[in-house]
Amino acid sequence: KYIMKCEFQEEEYMGSTRDNIYIDINKRTFFLADNIDNESAGKLMWDILYLIREDKEQDKKILCYNREPIKLYINSYGGSIDDMWGLIDIILASKTPIYTYCLGYAQSAAFNIFLAGHKRFCLEHSVFMYHQMSYWRDGKHQDFVENRVEMDNINKQNEEYVIKRTKIPEDVIRNVRVTKKDFYIHSSKAIEYGVVDKILM
Image (cartoon, rainbow, N blue to C red; front, side, top):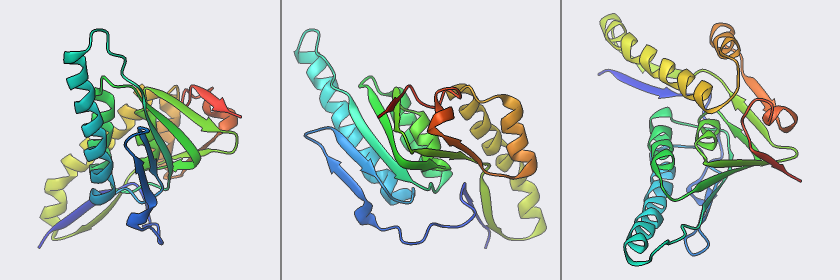
């Protein structure tokens, strides 16, 4: 049986529980402090889609309806790239403004989710981290050959997304891939790199 799992993390963050997602629909506030996987991303997507749908209905009823922003707070080491894209695409396509806030750290897949925010904020000691994705795979040689094209496509898609959503130079992104190193961005550099719009003091 062939198994391939694409993630950003080289090691799964231990200690993650499903209790680390907090949602207040009435206040349009979400807090992600968990590993990003099908369950955690699914919970966020479901409730965010609910608010977007509610706003769409109000648009039909109320002239010049003002969509109140949804706030997504992030404190996560990252997780699955496949589950990450689902949440990112919902945020990017949303007519309801979705603001992202980094509390502590937004690394790996969580960094990419943070970048999807229509407006992006962090605190003084927030830390971001970008790196190339990692693979867990099993199978025969031909299995790897056949999936190499898809792996390259996923990695290219990820690099292009980060370049488009930030001011991080392309040569820095290429260097991360070649050297296989983690690229950390502290709040002092976050505005310069186009990662955040404002640092909240």
